[in-house]
Image (cartoon, rainbow, N blue to C red; front, side, top):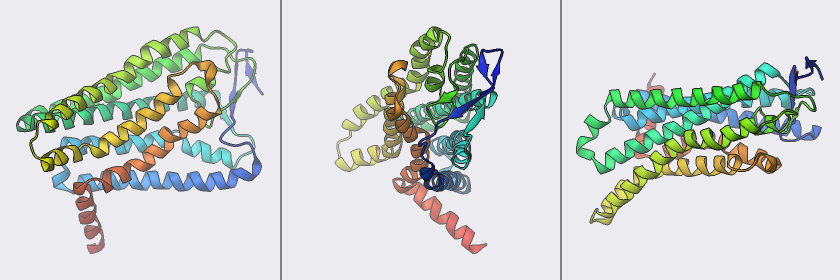
Amino acid sequence: MRWNNLTRPSEFVLMGLSSRPEDQMPLFALFLAIYMVILMGNLIIILVIYSDNRLQTPMYFFLSILSFVDICYTTVTIPKMLTNFLSEAKSILYTECLTQMYFFLSFGNVDSYLLGAMAIDRYVAICNPFHYVTKMSYKFCGILLVFAFIIPFLHSLLHVLLVNRLTFCASNVISHFFCDVNPVLKLSCSSTFVNEIVIKTEAPFVIMTPCTCIIISYLRIFITVLKIPSAAGKYKAFSTCGSHLTVVILFYGSASYVYFQPLSSYTVKDRVATLFYTILIPMLNPFIYSLRNKDMKRGLGKLLVKIKSQ
């Protein structure tokens, strides 16, 4: 272990998902396959949306951005994880660790804000259908997209700067498969009081902003749908929200389990739970949005026909 001025290591060691040598190759093969599915699935979603004129709407615009962000989100962690499966050292440089932390937090929160923007889109489409074109204009969608990137990237910068001020003089072994905030904070031998206060105050505010948009939007949608007299009309209205609502529940449910608890209680169970919202949900998103969406299935069919005809 190398140290700079006895305050921080030049590198960390990522414990990963398993320390047993016999597990490394099976885990490498598994996560390589998952990564390929994430890349191909989300790239197909993007290609389908931009190749079909019928899908040039705000909802699918945000979905294409979500797919792009999911690719970036998983690329921050999975390639390094795959490298470590094949390496005995399993190390990551201090600067690389902070960089990984920054982009992981950034893209993870962008995901959250995009889900909030998509909830607003569904609210306007169902509750104000006659004003949908004017309210969900290119300008308004652009504003939502700017906020979806600026706020998370500034939020992440704050947390990384606070971590960078800490000293690490006991251990450099991170009990995780990537540089997440809580596992790194547990290694600090200086006070993490400010970090924990920010996590408990600023972080919930940033996270709850899109979550509040989602809750309010779906409450209004639910009230509006209940007023529809026919069962077929109610089903049609709810069916347009099914895919989005499924992703929202999976994403916020798993992320809340990991982050909304005291730092001292962070255990190996949280490491496993993190896999759900960092890797499994980005892998499931293309299937959720394509298998439960008639427009996407039709667009995928048209794209396949175009490819075969060339």
